[in-house]
Length: 413
Image (cartoon, rainbow, N blue to C red; front, side, top):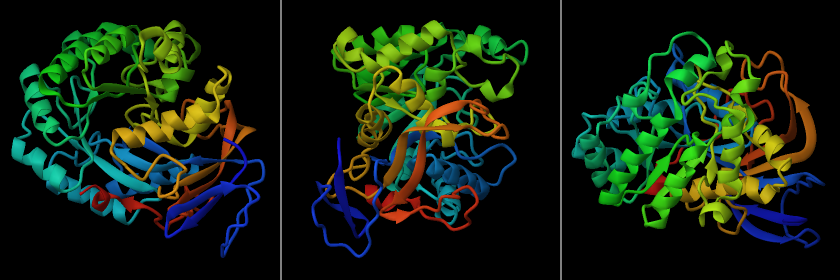
């Protein structure tokens, strides 16, 4: 990475040249010392808060995402009304996103115990880029799958050559939440729920050959399980979220609802071990364990901080000696590869000109009115510009009424 000139034509990157090369163009934008990054690809992000119209959810979430450097949302099928478990529901999301999105949008199809082979095939034929399911109550609208339905669904998805995103907490290992705080969630949702869920998922993946993506991966003690599975050829990957990497349970207000999520925030020791799985998995286990980071956005039902995903992650990553190359691998390159988005995630000739101007040395204070877990915190790194296919998104992305992105279904057929 260094000084360079990037030429854009017809929405794609036409050339990547030396900064001083004379590239013919109608318009030139000089970012000076500001870094130019590939736009983030955010996998498994929910867009709709309870009581909110679907169109409002797409408008508000994608504008906040664009302001934070996310150019493609791979939308979780739930929580949402309707959950994306049928082609009718998918059409509703297509309609809502087409006229209201400030980013590109792709979709995950939801799998429930009632999903038939025909329904899954129809969802794929109509453009979903992957599927998602849950082993617990985390995704409202997606009831937990038992082992029979999990194995059956994985076998069907394996034939489509797309990933299946799994929330891996095992419902049978969850207790009753007694009290409003994060500590109550911790007591009710112990790490063994993730361990048992992973064991079930990996057993089904081994027999089916399905490509499995764990989201979110939180219990760092389970990293060795993932490593062992990869060693024997099970195609499994995992992503975590900035809040699990930045916010240890001991250091957040216990009763503040803005910190509540499922799985819950865990200990500082777990946070450090999670960083180890992200940074040094290849050294510790012979392979990368956690290979991507997504916002984990769950407006109204969990942590909602999509606008601060990039600066929050960078604030913690640069303290550990990471550079922008690692940042873009976690947030753009690997998520795009996982979801088969062949023209996303890199600044390279032929790729979509989904770009982000990022000032890595600039500090900013999250407004006290933000309402999320980073409010009032000082974060390092600031997004100063976002482009979708070479078209700039207005800097006031939260309030701008005009759509800039929309569904990407035609790219995947």
